[in-house]
Amino acid sequence: MKIGVTGATGQLGRLVIASLKTKVAAENIVALVRNPEKANDLGVEARAFDYEAPDAKAFEGIDKLLLISGNEIGQRARQHTNVIEAAKAAELKEIVYTSLLKADSSTLNLAAEHLATEEAIKSSGMVYTILRNGWYTENYTGSVKGAVGAGAFIGSAGNGKIASAARADYAEAAAVVLCSNDFAGQTLELSGDSAYTLSELAAEISKQTGKNIPYNDLPEAEYAKILAGFGIPEGFAQAIASWDVSASKGDLYDDAKVLSKLIGHPTTSLASVLAASL
Ligand code: NAP
Image (cartoon, rainbow, N blue to C red; front, top):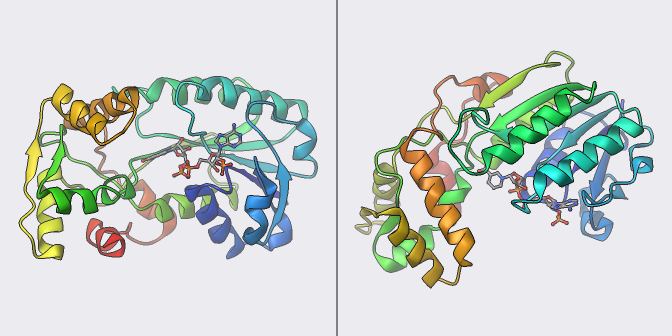
């Protein structure tokens, strides 16, 4: 059985390939990537593949596909539909998709594109599994250096609890599902075992750095303005601030521990992702 992985040169995709290589022979893995040269170090076959114009021929010999959601916000429902149409044309049997936690009820402005993709997959007739991935802990640890420099961690998430997990945990879950037939037709809500507020995140940063880094909760518009001041494009800065507001409403929280059950061990703790980033 051959497994194809799109976005395999991205951060999640690389981890999925590494995890798959521990489960199946490298000859049974195909990286479907925009730039095959970027895939030289993956140690698996790489085929050219673009969500803008996916070539059905790229699916030759592939039985199961992992469609990793693209990163061009606003273009993804269309791009993913292109991929689903090409997969159907190639008579691909099975598709696994990386969606968003609670995509059908989340107030995150990212949810609509994921839900549209889920619906396109369900009406394609292919056997499917939807992986509704929660937040990556790395989304926050990327801001730690800036927070330490500025003397505070800022955001608009209030007391919202965030049940994030490491990218590697979600990658391992994708590999488990790709190597099994037990998840056909399922939609899995995946999140970290334990949740934290941004105040608790700031306390952990303080503990690990030995510096006092409080959490300053800001109104959404003020937070977006500060992010734009750091050089983040205005629209994206507003989106980031809005995601925090969704977090304050509980959209990044879940306590079902489906992810750790799937991978057979606890999800990576906030403390260890933070320690690795420092
Ligand atoms: P990433 O590093 O940005 O990887 C995105 C991958 O998508 C890259 O490999 C990229 O190809 C590929 N891609 C984008 N547009 C494409 C196109 N038109 N045709 C073919 N490939 C295309 O993101 P990540 O951290 O691995 O995360 C994977 C996905 O999860 C993201 O794309 C996003 O949808 C979602 N996400 C989730 C969270 C979360 O917290 N759960 C956070 C951020 C993103 P190249 O390698 O050629 O650039």
